[in-house]
Amino acid sequence: MPRILLAYSRPARFVQLDRDILRERFAVEEWEQPGRLANPLRLVPAVRRADLVFGWFASWHTFLPVTLAWLLGKPSLLVVGGFDVAALPEIGYGYQQGGPQRWLSRWVMARATLLVVNSEFSRREVEANVGLRGKQVRVVYHGVPDELGELDGGEREPGALTVSAVARLSLERKGLRPFVETGALLPEMPFVLVGEWQDDAIEELRRRAAPNVSFRGWLSREALDDELRRAAVYVQASRHEGFGLAVAEAMLAGCIPVVTAVGALPEVVGEAGVRIEGAEPEQIAAGIRRALELGEGARRQARERILRHFPLERRRDALLELVDALLARA
Image (cartoon, rainbow, N blue to C red):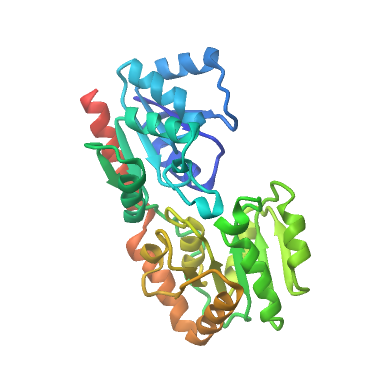
């Protein structure tokens, strides 16, 4: 059985889904590196044992695994399309703004055998910001497992939910600040923010929050699913999204999405939701009101869009085909 070294900085939901796909056919060894420094005494043997390196994002945690694979003549597949290819100086987001992180990310992407992105938006962003001439970039959309099943058909109480790790960088990038501030404009309904508190950003959000805004922190998968089943509207007021897996999961659960028309969010939502032109509280509030007027049919439309366009099986088949092809050429 071929061996794959899976390199990532943290075991995010999308990493876990890809890991489970790879385990169906390959022996997967995991390399989790949350910081900049790697232990070469552990990493070098791991790369030597592997037949292929599979990495998530071009950053410090994939720098050595991909470089070593390149030096050893082994194939590597690198999934990119987030902070590694973005350049948004207005919010201080993205490695492609400049400096050593831009050099590092471009080095890693240039030496990967194949780049995979999760949306057409990310493919265009790689071309515009990274500029790797002749580099093969494949679009493989995220696949969303249907773990909640059919909708119960009952009406949901008006309310808005968003899910994101709570950190300084997320206040604008994920639209957490304007989401929380929108609560004061719609005091008759609950606003819920779910996500791990990673730094002192939670204190700023609490200072800005009206009494109808609640902060749940990290939740288990079961508890998060319960929140998704209850929520009428899911808000993603992001400034950048390479896909928006949380939005897709919420739509699958029957939440009506209200999203900014940025990044890959229009690709994910399509016509099954409400797009807003900006992330100001007044715009978010207007979007939530429009979503609540759409009714139960919009919930079914949101769910059907994800089932039709982003099934887990489609990503599974595409990733396994790409890995098989790389191994066959090695």
